[in-house]
Image (cartoon, rainbow, N blue to C red):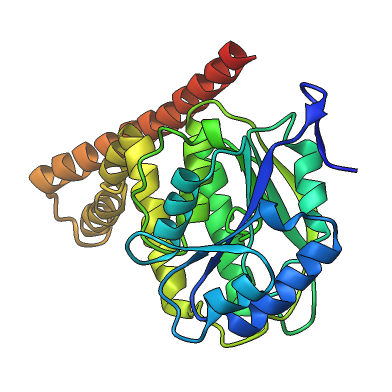
Length: 304
């Protein structure tokens, strides 16, 4: 049975998009599993980034459409896909066989209640994800939740479904693997609902492309996204750091006065000013977070 839109009671119009770059081996297994799980061939789209290993030929042999993406990087592949399809819902998943195709139906089962459904990697096969990547993903997801008021557990998952109209006006600022965070940031900031479903995660087929340096790039991009969507918070957070030199300066002034009997009135005034400015700015940063979350809640209420 075809998935149905639980909000409207009609057959769900969806397409599964596989961004690729030299994924011949993984793509073949992924396509076989998708088709075996009941996803029709005409609902699968491969968006290729200029592979030289015959990736598109693998898609053609399986009877699946393959198009070349605009520009370079995973973000541009996602952007190309959203422009190329007219389905109501787009399911994105990596073509390296790490995400079981059976979870496509799990994502689609919730898309009627949410604007984006993320497959949270809860059942990870041993050796599929190194500890450093799990730690980085956990830290970046926590930071994302703090800024955008969400309660996600895996914002960087490469398997997710999104309503196309929820991201129709999105400006693509990311250039690589941080596209998942950018989509979630846009959906959350415009009042959209984001849900998660637990999924499995396997060892990939083929050469791994994501390295530690990409983790730092993703962290940078999430910081830029935070600055873009809540600049006031970052402004006050930066000023709040004045507490650090203010504290050390105040400690030095107090030490000189208590133990050496030397009074540094000017330095004491400067220390007090730094502490007062930093503490008040910290309070304003918290207020900016609260106001942003209140804005998101109001947008969600208006959408309902």
